Length: 233
Ligand code: IPE
Ligand code: IPE
Ligand code: MG
Image 1 (cartoon, protein in one colour):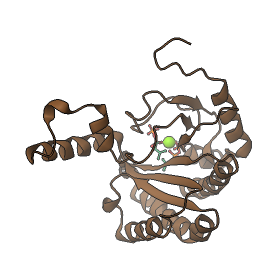
Image 2 (tube, rainbow, N blue to C red):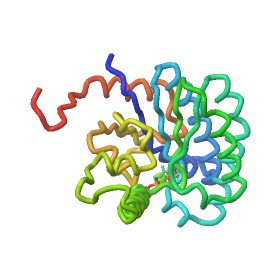
Image 3 (cartoon, helix red, strand yellow):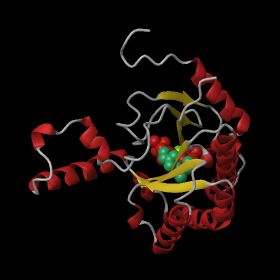
Image 4 (cartoon, rainbow, N blue to C red):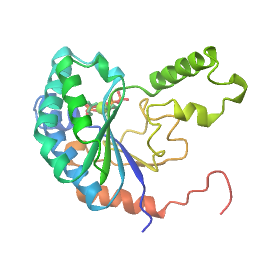
């Protein structure tokens, strides 16, 4: 079976999962963390080298303060609790997004764990935090313009590869498969350029209920796709 090298997931539906059970949105996010653990395991079991998880978008700051604070606390707990697992399974943690704008505690915990896991090579786990694909492109343009002003590059020679090298994903292959849970059919500002030729799989399942079986189904569906890249087969 043809496996994707890079799977990127828009983890969605925590709030609705909680609402259906008359529980708080934060409880939905707590349950969602269990899914994160399961899916990291599933990626390792399937020998997928790159897994990227959309955990917090730059637009998610617009949610009620209580929810944002709760999410940041859960993120810190996750980083603390999972350090050993990342070590054991040789997972290398990376981030994309403006993480310097996160609360200091989160920022420090992330930096530490990224550093501690940098030599691992079973799975590259990239967590998108305070991530906006549009902002990422803005940052890349700024950086390219600055390089050009310093005569480090010739503006006439800029091509897509120049842009790709200035994106935060420069060390990652483009995603082959994007999974979005909870039945929403949109990308919500996630990896817009990088997913130009990604296969998209929408699952109706809310993220807290998404399990290894659902993940395997997504992989099976991916294997059935014919990727043509504009050419003919
Ligand atoms: C995804 O679940 C988690 C984050 C965006 C942080 P949601 O919180 O978006 O859940 P719904 O979409 O409201 O159900
Ligand atoms: C996208 O989900 C962001 C994450 C999964 C972190 P949202 O729930 O924020 O997206 P919209 O608002 O439904 O587009
Ligand atoms: Mg949502």
